[in-house]
Amino acid sequence: MRVLGIETSCDETGVAIYDSRAGLIANQLYTQSKLHESYGGVVPEIAARNHLQKTVLLIQAALQECQLKAQDIDAVSYTAGPGLVGSLLIGACIGRSLAFALNIPSIAINHMEGHLLSPMLEKSPPDFPFISLLVSGGHTQLISVTAVGCYALMGESLDDAAGEAFDKIAKLLGLGYPGGPELSNIAKNGVRGRFIFPRPMTNRPGLDFSFSGLKTFAAQTIYNNEKTQQVRADIACAFEDAIVDTLLIKCQRALDQSGFKRLVVAGGVSANCVLRSKLTDMMARRNGAVFYARPEFCTDNGAMIAYAGAIRLKESQNHSLEITVHPSWPLS
Ligand code: KG4
Ligand code: ZN
Image (tube, rainbow, N blue to C red; front, side, top):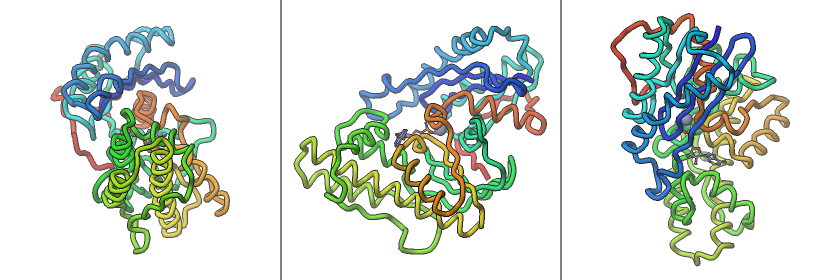
């Protein structure tokens, strides 16, 4: 069974083909970040227009990559939400229409489920049950996962997502978009302990997050200090540590609460090296195991949507010719 997956929820056009026997056999990605960089964030109209230009070309490139024809595909999966409505509509229209033309099933995939399942594309995938930390540009969530489709939300951000906070502070530090990787890069030269930032909502019970106060604290620190390269690096380092420690403390709580021994970390921020190293150490101390996707599958991609399509093929076939998307679509 071969599933062609299409991802167009934000500013990456991803197309991949997952074969239930051979695994991932094609993976194509076009990143729009250069188009949005001068605006300091994603411009929805530009994103949608660019998906329209790129999606069919990437489908063609994916088929060429594994030397298949469209007729060799058994199903099409596409991201139907959450995300930018105009961008979602492009992938949904193209995906559903391709399936209609080929007379094969289509599967509408929740983007966050795609992220959640992305570590399953790796050599040692996690078994169920596990705690999933989903950390992206739009979401920060802790989810108890007992099987595919059995997702219980344990906690989430009440305001900014972790990736969004990274991007906003990176912008104030004069870095490009997306800011997370750039901020993390300059933080490597920062002096640890030169600035100490709060670890929000960790001194009270619960699994929710709030990063807006930390963001304001970091912004004030930027305004009140010289903008030398060293000071910017020191602030980036303090900010990254505060986000990472906060995520780590809440992961420990979720693991304690559930009794689970496995942690799965997914979404763009899971590419962060400091986060990965601290969570790996923490799980080793607990005699547990932590699972990530390879860095290029942490950020948005078609592979996770093709994989989720293959897993969801039986129960989630969509035969309706009314094409719908869900800009806000809770995972649970
Ligand atoms: O999952 P993703 O590609 O898109 C959404 O679904 O939102 O996540 C993008 C987010 C951006 O906010 C980006 O700055 C952040 O992930 N990100 C990182 C790193 N790589 C990507 N944040 C911190 N450190 C990184 N290495
Ligand atoms: Zn994403």
